[in-house]
Image (cartoon, rainbow, N blue to C red; front, side, top):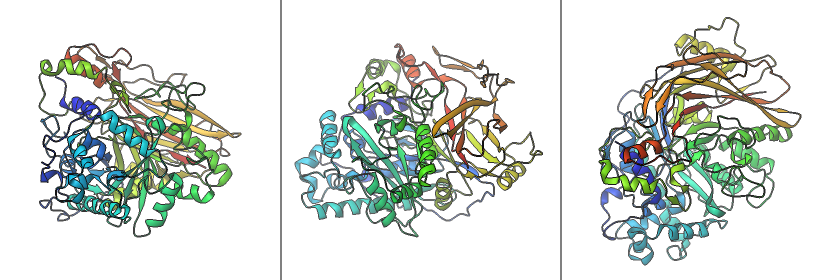
Length: 626
């Protein structure tokens, strides 16, 4: 049977629901602090060579105005309980639970609603009985709501609600109160050594045609900025980084994570700000200091690369939302400046001319869930299923439905996860791993990726795995992903990957190299490890795997696959005079796409314009050479 997860995911994009009684707001959805949480009482385990931890750094709860307006009534308490492995009754009424709890999470509700949202949902506050707040609680036509939001949001700075924020100082006080509640909730659930909660929020600047310039803002500990800077406080990205740099002084530490750059119409990594002005050297330095990571995949699409756009290849087709831009097209399409691979290459070019690389980012994945269910990325998590006969017609409709912002619902993904290599499961060690970019991203599984580069000795063992001896040598003789490798010698790279035991086995590992040659960006992609005894051919590609999935039943033949893959790689074309970066992609064996699973269980035909099967994958952060 199809899972409630898929239906919940789709409904989060199309629901117009609200409270049945506008004045009936359960206290459990308002309370900021869960008094039952006890943390910090057990010793914290340390890992000298680091351990893989998995989290979700992009999560919305009912405290995000768009999620609340869509009918969500599960607040931060519910989201934290879900992330740490407890069963939570989701919006469809089904108790749902992660198969494996997350190690860490950041709830990133939209800061633009901090001024008014809680004021509209907490009885007793002056705004609660206003017509505007009643409309928030009862729901409105979603298309109207979104049009209003984007009309206000594309102004620079974005416009506050003219009725609820007539007194701007009062509005800012409300925003501060919300921000303090967010911190208190995160602190209550933080449990060092077992479950880490990072304090954060989302900065959500808007563009024409429902475009986005969004970043999640993540802090290291309890020392944070006094006011969550939103697009209502600053005009552009330049001002955001200037404010963050000024307001977050030691011991405060912060990093930002751009996401949905596929919706940014090429502006996230443009060399000019939103007003067309060139960035100064100080602007670039702030970006390099704060913009440390890139959310490469999530439910609203994959932003690594786009086949036929800039630096791309035939494996750039996973999770695409928009087509390539045609001549003269500026919005609702992908251009090179929207894609990670091209933006990273442009960072190398800027470093050649300015000495600063503002686009030097590691990678993560996350969900961008608007259902208070962090890390819920797979349609086969245990839950109570509704019989197909009860919702088959609904599924048929949903597969053809379009969302005013998102477009066709069927194009969406189910989310991703952030992986870090950290010394312990604590705020400090996880943030430090994020900051040094020793991170990887997946399209939802918990596969592991290690990636090192260095002048490894010839005797570096060929049979290495994730053992401590090999890792000690790798850390001693090389650098891990996310790092710089200055060298005049031909470097050696070691990649090791292990499958998620709850997912399909591994198909292959691919290396991507991007470099600057005579001022132009060049790329090379080649497979470096294949499962099932296969070896890369003269074209640098593994022969096609015999692993398969029957898309009529979604039954997987996983006999040709690997639990682990690894390789030692030397680049025969290495040139010490050229700046370059290298990263790896790890592909799992094929499974049914969620749309195929949903259509099969509903007794309808899968969408003809989408692949029936997909290969989920993961990305390492890069290693920069010279």
